[in-house]
Amino acid sequence: MNTEQEFTVTVADIRDIADKVVELTLVAADGEIPKWEPGAHIDLILGPDLVRQYSLCGDPDDHDTLTIAVLRETVSRGGSAYVHEHLSAGDTLRIRGPRNNFPLHDSESYRFIAGGIGITPLLPMIRTVARQGAAWTLHYGGRTRGSMAYLSELSALGDIHVHAKDETGRMDLDTILTPDPDTLVYCCGPESLLDSVEIRCAATWPAATLHIERFAPKPIADAATDREFEVECAQSGMTVQVPAGTSILAAVEAAGIPVLSSCREGTCGTCETVVLDGLPDHRDSLLDPQDTDVMMICRSRARTPRLVLDL
Ligand code: FES
Image (cartoon, rainbow, N blue to C red):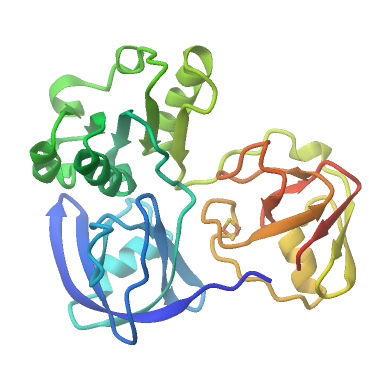
């Protein structure tokens, strides 16, 4: 079964860093801050049914604090509104993680593309590659400069290109994504940006060049053809039928098998489960078709009539 460390932190500081963006500095209240790598995120447990994921945007070498930045969403599902309206310095919070679905791979050269609050997972990556001496550029888009967090810090680090929409319009992705076979592309931001970058990289860049992180679930194209399949849960010794329209997660929970979950829409990685036999049909926003040994059971299904899972 998947289990994760959960612990208490204290909000040491909360401050405005851009239009509608606050930065929270968290310190461990009971124990140590766990180690993390660039690209990692934590779950903030804000209430019984209010768990939200936020990228760590501090310095991975700072073992005393965790830093997150939270945009007040125009249409909040509760998480960003809670952070902006209810949290203040001195409050304690339960958190889970860190967890990393967006790791930084070794390369001599990187092209980072951020849209708005999508800068948060990229900031620790940029700090790291700048320290290592790798070549990098950042293209950072936003509504206005005032809405873009960490602009001055990034400018001090090196080669950044600011694309404020009210000054220069949208980023010209065709120019930004001129292919370079020795460069990795890392992108995070709104869906429209991710989709555009994905299309261009698929057309002109080598496979496995692009690494993206989604904050929202990918649409499912072929849900109408979903079929029932069988899941054998190896640890618990139970076999569960998963009908069309029901997730594996819901089916195993209904059978009394506890599974840790959070977003339940394939974006956070909490429900990652080892596949012992059978082929997963990945519907999440994290795994690729070649990842056949794990799956996100809140959203993904089966390519074979039967899966054996480490549950
Ligand atoms: S619960 Fe978030 S990916 Fe499954």
